[in-house]
Image (cartoon, rainbow, N blue to C red; front, top):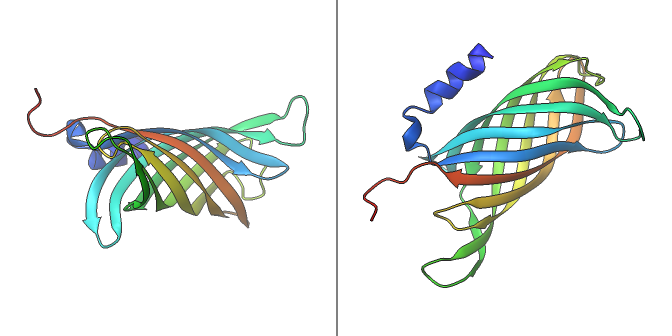
Length: 181
């Protein structure tokens, strides 16, 4: 936990200059034991080749047995996620020029370190994961945006496992630079 807060502090100074606070739902997809939980994170703009945003976040979740009718939860999992996102390729714009809503595609690459208690997965209680998540992003480019992402994630632990990862996120700006009326 201390390491996670240290990385968060290093990437978030000064806090008021951050571009976005992200909150979301995350789940692996399939039968048997799956991970379901929440994400919270911060992202800031960068210009590094095709990458436009770098972020850091925390993932808190539990294990859910998709085949169980009753008593299908077990254990707890936490993770530290570092992500990089490409620019949005705009598909459509709706609304008037002063309040436009855009729909577009982007790709997010996540690297996550997990620590689990009472894990039913064969990867063990500590593992890392890499995910490539194509996403559909919509919202006001200068305001809140919603993202639906689905893609493969590979777990590297005692065993290597591949699963589908589903995320639904909302990102909202923390502060705007410049003068405001």
